[in-house]
Length: 494
Image (tube, rainbow, N blue to C red; front, side, top):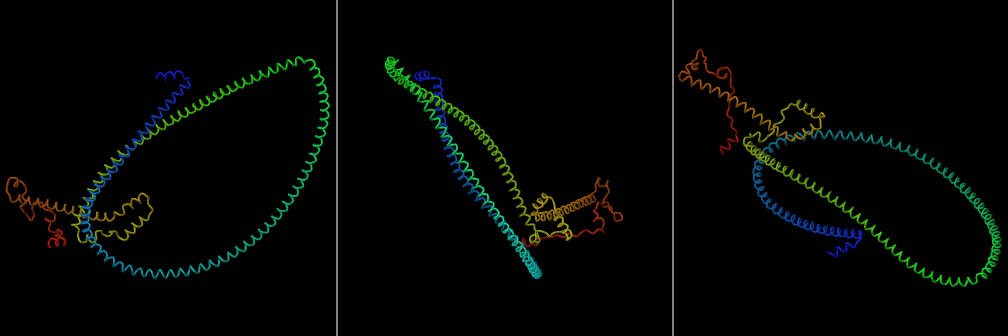
């Protein structure tokens, strides 16, 4: 630790910052590796849990399937018994329907043969009419085709001639343009050659004159230089020897200076290269640090977004799960209620089948009670355009027509039974009143004697409260007969 502190103390601010950043990067890398190991461990654990869950689900489904098979087998056996009885009843009904339909089929076959013969006759007449129309249309088509061909040929010939004349004119124009272009090109070449020769000759003459002038000037200058050189040598002979010595010394010192300068230049180049390298590495490090920081911020923001999405997804899934459980519970309750209702309906159906008459067993649905005029009015009303919602609603309740027939018949029977029950109750009440009056009449006590006695009959009139049918002999009561079904009698007799 003291060495590390001394090392940090000896570092510059830049090196210390780089060292801390490297340390942070190493810690970040180590933390990331730990997170990856933890994620891998959790994934493995999740995979094992999913595998165990699937295995347990398969076992539960196996056991549940066996239980369901047993329950379904029992249910199917019961349904088979019910269906066998229903099938026998339906077979009897269908046999009666088949006999009636066979008769209708014979009549329909005769009508079909008559309609077929008339239809074939009409088809033959229509075929002859179609053949005559096709022949006339073929003649018209051939005439129009010949006219179109002649018109097409004339137009084609005129277009070909026009094309030929235009192509010849264009070829003449192109030949004239090529001739004109060649003439212009020759004139331009000749003019260019003449101008080029003139400029070349002029340049040669000017160069020759300048050369003569310059040669004279150089000879004069050379003579002057020789004279001045001769005078200079005579006056500076001693100085020349001193100059040579100094020159040799100067050359030696120049060599040393040059070497030293090379060394300095090399050192400067090395320092500049090191500075450039340091600045470049610093820039690279700054850029890398900025990139890492931006990447870290982006990763953090992405992590936060993913975390938020995961939390939202979990909340949504939790809400969906709660809704699913609530809906499943309600659906299970509704299905149980409907199952109980269906079982009750089936039981009632089985109970009601025992009470059906022979006519209901053979023909359970009565024919339409409407007259021909009323059926025509209903068909016209159905043919009229109606709203789409009303039409769809009417279409949905169409298959329930037979149910409503049975329901209406049963409802009418119930109303009739209620009415008969009401009349019987009223008659029973009247009879009770009469019986009470009779009992009051044959007994003697203060309470009875204080009221009107129904046993006193004066002029064929009594004080007893009788119904109209009993009091008035002129009213005819309907005869009531005891009705017992033949199936019930046969069953109990056997």
